[in-house]
Length: 210
Image 1 (cartoon, one colour):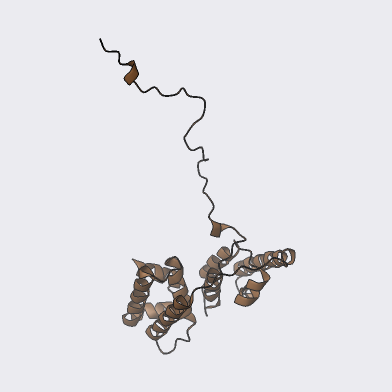
Image 2 (cartoon, rainbow, N blue to C red; image 1 turned 30 degrees about the vertical axis):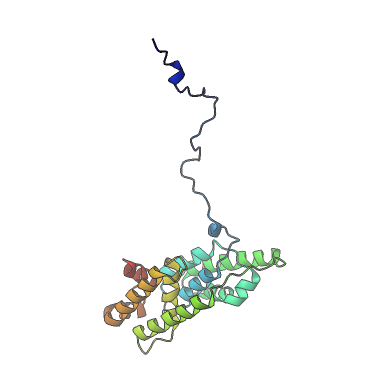
């Protein structure tokens, strides 16, 4: 009779060590960009263009200000991008909700700058080829928006597309630009809605991605 014991794979006894993940339910791992001290200049400028659009809605202003409140830009970034000046101007906005949030952000940034004024600045910029293609995309958008466009809305649209595309000028970005340009060229309704702020640029860009 053949004994089968030698063919049996015996598992080690449980020593109280569990291989299962014990992460707390509901917790989410933080990414590098989610940290307050990590500031992406492209994102700062994107929100700046949204805040500076003429006749911008309170909803869009609050949305961008809330995103900016999560960051602590250095003095150099505040000056070079002009975002500090933009937020400060909103402290005199007609809507108190905007005023209160802008004042809170401005004071927090001021406090941060005073405490971190000697820290070195690390700035990451797009390569020359990316910059050139983005400028070309903005020219297409200006043309599609019409002769009255001064470039402000076109810049804001392009920055939103770049953001949604993961800040990469690849196939998705190029297809998205073409779709937005085509929609604006042949969609008078969309052009008017964007110009009057009845349609937010973030919503419009998201719709064109579908």
